[in-house]
Length: 297
Image 1 (cartoon, one colour):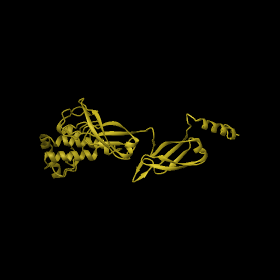
Image 2 (tube, rainbow, N blue to C red):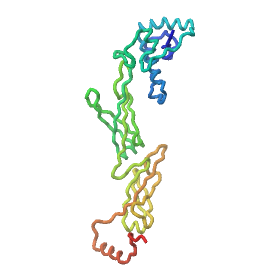
Image 3 (cartoon, helix red, strand yellow):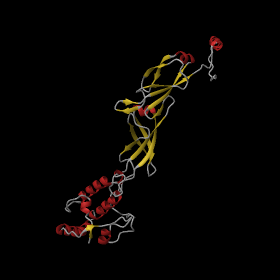
Image 4 (cartoon, rainbow, N blue to C red):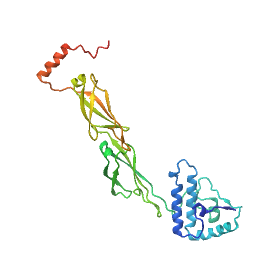
């Protein structure tokens, strides 16, 4: 005779248990064996089917009494002929269940009126934030339309130093569970947008450093605005437009007090309106300078 120990499946040591104890054991078993926390385990889905089947029987007083008569006999006699029951491929219920309680509905299809607690589905959405909001952290509000068409507002606490693409989980704010099951969660993917001043690449921040032609030619010391303070940098003589100056530990937050770097890209800026004196100086420089950037010899 085939046999399936539903109490063992729910990790219950005796059949002298209340309905609430059965429900509690069921919830713990689902949480422990859920495929989401057993990634790559091909047996997880079958294990969940066994757990649901056990709960279906033991939570029904009539089915439980009928099952207990066989279970008590099995435990008392320690009959070694009992074997773990198999299930047909894709079937919701095992061969033991179908033989003992009658053929269930077509395999692979859950009963609509099942009283098994079912966790609600997770809901996923996205939110855009600035680099500054991600660096310092911020509390934001988002509004989403629920399944009944109404708008609901959620408060989202964005932690300082959150990564681009990281998800924030609001527990229990997803779709409602069924038959006493827990609600799903709301997962919010954070997208950090580049701004006019800073651009984020990994943990490094990039910014433009505008300098004059004579600063580039002669070299100079300048203050550069990082995201939280000013930093002094030295621009060497003959610096070319497009060259980058790295300022360590002034980038985005990594964690444990560490930070990425601030990369300042040099861009040589020219005045749009020149005074007469400036025009004469540029003409004089043109006459005396031997520099020709187009001369590649």
